[in-house]
Length: 257
Image (cartoon, rainbow, N blue to C red; front, side, top):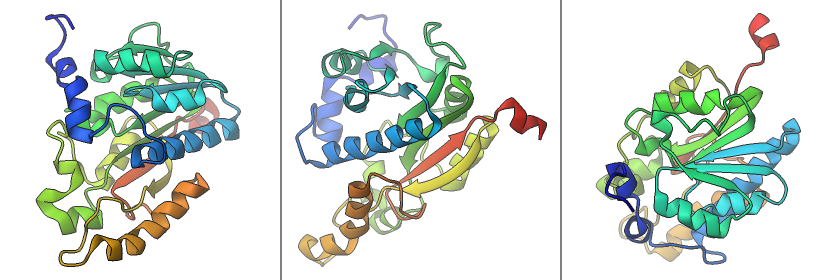
């Protein structure tokens, strides 16, 4: 890593992934494996529903999701971390991935208006100006294309019950922990039409003090497991640690109407 790289690039190094999230790879059937599988399934459904083929992942990390999609679709990824992009070249060799800062705009080889779907999984909460980033994401979409993003849900039961111990407060790079309605406003201010909201369920155990985790687990994990196994976003918007936002870039005909 050269000394001329942005400071933010240096933050997201190998140590960051290992210390903050406790992993630097995927273990079959662990929580990260299920999360990647679930998100990739929803992306695939979105693309097939619209008949699209080109996907851009902002904050692609190690490329785990792109790896699940690259055999079926044209896959592209950007991440501010040069370390993550090095790993993406290993895990998703058939995807085009590059170091880039979405707040500063993407390199010219990522053509504006050329993608059917842009996905950002746990990215915008790391940015000081998420509106600028969402506008950049929207600019990459074809008319009728879709942006699918997830961010921590500050209105969740977990956030209220756990307080300072809530998972999203454990990462010091989370600088935009906004209210759910603020994220919807940002999407609309970026020129997108929000057509669906959902959530990912409760998984940040323990939630209730004095109650063993094995008792809490079935109380909270049922809906989460059902959503994950279905491969769909079926939970109400506030029923989860993260909110999922699905938004569409209007077509010219939509604007005329």
